[in-house]
Structures are given as C-alpha cells and as structure tokens.
Image (cartoon, rainbow, N blue to C red; front, side, top):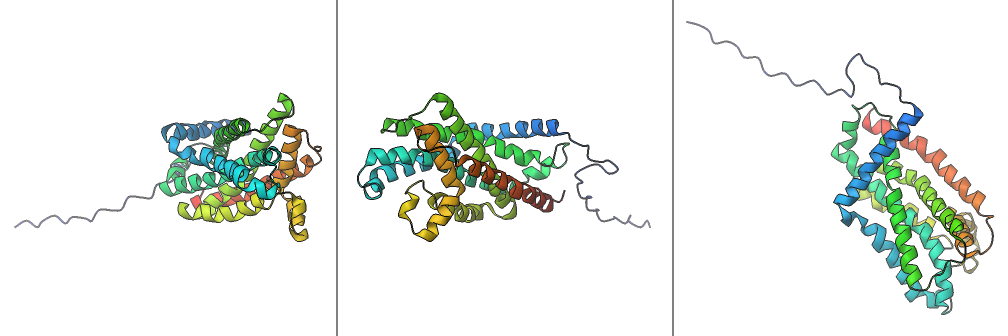
Length: 284
C-alpha cells in the first residue's frame, strides 16, 4: 500500500521591495529631478480634464467671496462706497485664491497616498522630492484659472486696473509664487494626517487666521490694537499691499521684502519637514 504524498503548505510570497536586492538607488541630478517633477505635474492637468468637477473650488469659492463682500457687506464696511470697496477688495481676493486652493492640494496628496499611488512610485528611479514637487507645480494651472476668473468677473461688475500690463503680470507672477510657497504647508499636512476627510478641517484652521486676519476685507485701522499687530505682520496683508500697488498704484512696494521673506520662510520650514515626514510615512 502506497502512502499518500505529504503536501507542504503554501509559503507566503516575500514582501515586495522598492528596489531589487543588491542594487542601489541611482543618484538623480538636480536638472533631472526638475524634469521628473514637471512630468508628474502633467498628471494634475490630465486629472482636471477628466474630472472638471474638481474645479468647483477654483471657480465657485472665489466668486462667492467676491459677490458676498461686494454686494452684502460693502455697505457696512465701506459706508456705502461699493465701487471704492471693490477696488480695494479685488487685489486681496487675488491673494486669497491661491491661499484657499492649497487646501485641495493637501486633500489630493493624502488621497493619493491612501490609494497607493506613491507606493508604486517607490520602485521607479526618480528623485524622492519629484512626486511632491510635481503636485505643487501642477497647481499652477488652478491658480491661473482662479485669478483669471476673479479678474474677469470683477471687471464686469466695476473693478478697474489702474497700472500697466507689466505690473499686472508681475502681480500675477508674485501671487502664483506665493501660493506655491504656502502650498508646502498643505503638502506637509497631507502627509501627516492619515485620512483625506480630516485634511480640510485642519488646514482651514491655518488658512482662516491668514485670510480673515488680514486687510483683505477690512482696513487694519478699524481693528483692535492687539489684532493690528498680527494683521500688519501677516504675509497675506503684505501680499495684498503689494497687489494694490501693482494693480491700483496705491502706496509703494515697501511690503514686498517682507512678503518675500515670508515665502522663503515657508519653504525653509516646511520643505525639510515635508521630506522627513514623507520618508517616514512611506518608509523610503
């Protein structure tokens, strides 16, 4: 009588390694890393084409703020001078647009991490910073669309630019750079927060003091002294002052150095924190 062959239980598959054993990650040069970031940034543009409903925050939110403050609150804030208030409001709203849109960047990043998109990138020979930088660069399209929509609609209801095209282009460029620098705060939050649903609530707590604790919607002189101290130092206030000079010719560019210092500060603080959190969460 023959004995039945003993069957060995199936062995679990070995865990997938980011790189093959015995190999080392190839060193990526700065220019190559920049090219990889721009290649990944095109993914954001493709996602916008396939899902145009994601542009709601680009269009609806800024226009809601424009109409609400112009037609509902201008009478109380500006003593009925609606046109004068609109002239002061629009340059500040153009700063508010990229600031508000950074919230969506953090949500999108957290969603991609949860779906495993960044895990798939680990096996590719790309710079560690390229996926994150690609998300930030990809937001430029959303910033430009939002700024163009606010400028176009506000012109229809009475806003008038008082300066030359060069100053207008400089203002738009500064607003985009401002949004890109602040975006790293949102990227950091998107990595640190485990679930996408929790990202907006936490980022709003950071965006609200920056936006409403500024001189976008009301002059700093009308606020309590303790609040004026923050408003005058607020990077959004400084950028709003720069915008009013470049679009309306009001004041001077004395606020520009402070605004640039804040942008550099956000990069210096949040970029290394983001890269450290990124390596810790994804384990590479």
